[in-house]
Image (cartoon, rainbow, N blue to C red; front, top):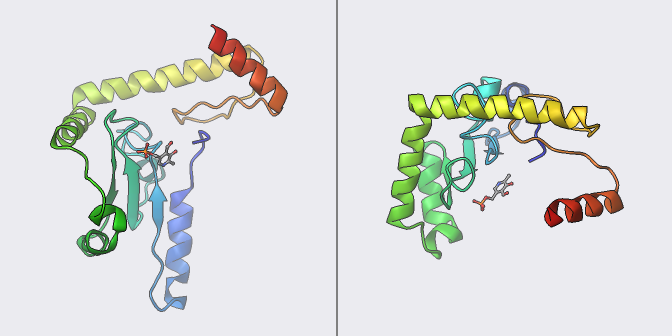
Length: 168
Ligand SMILES: Cc1ncc(COP(=O)(O)O)c(C=O)c1O
C-alpha cells in the first residue's frame, strides 16, 4: 500500500531455516493485492519480483484486474480446508458469473502481449510520476513499485493538499 514491498525471499528463507523447530511447520501468508497484475517483470507481483514462493497468496480482483472480489492461491489441501471452514466462503454470496468471466478475461489480457505492453507503460508512468514529484519538491519512496506515495508528514498540510486537489 505504501509503494514498498516485503522481501519475501528473505522471509521465506528465514521460515525454511526455522521450520523444523515448529511441530506443524511454518506457513507463509501474503496479501499482495497491490502487487499482482502490476509489480514484477510480467506482473506476477511480489513473488515474481523477489523470486520466491509463499504458501498462501491472497489478492484482490478489484485493483489491477478491475473487477470485484478476491482469491486465495495455495495447495489443493489448503484450498479444500478453506472451502470447508471459511465462514465467508460458506455464508456469503460469491462473485457473479459475469465477474468471474471478466476476471478470467483480465487474466488473459495480463498474460498477453498487450498486457506486457500495458505493464511497460505503467512502469514508465511510475518513473515519470516519481521524478516529477521529486522535481516539485515532494518526498516520495524511491523504487520500482507502481504505487507512488507522497509523504507530507504533517496532518494539517495533508488536509490542505487534499482540499486543494479536490477543488481542482
Ligand atoms: C492490502 C490490501 N488487501 C486487500 C484489500 C481489499 O481488497 P478488496 O477491495 O477486494 O476487498 C486492500 C484494499 O485496499 C488492500 O489494501
